[in-house]
Image (cartoon, rainbow, N blue to C red; front, side, top):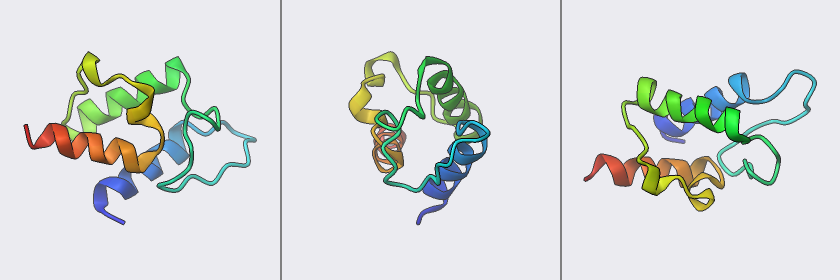
Length: 83
């Protein structure tokens, strides 16, 4: 697991999983299908990516396919870093 993958999994587990939810997040947890990402939690995730990872996500990338799981988020971040 890369450092970015670990940081994202940790952030989601600690900040987006509601108290009482019995969800253990890993890099392939379906974030949308599991209900972990709604509009407010997506905004928190985007803020984390911009502030802590240093990669702002442009509006053109706000597609559900890019937020399926941590693996797809990491791929999108790597793509944006290489531009």
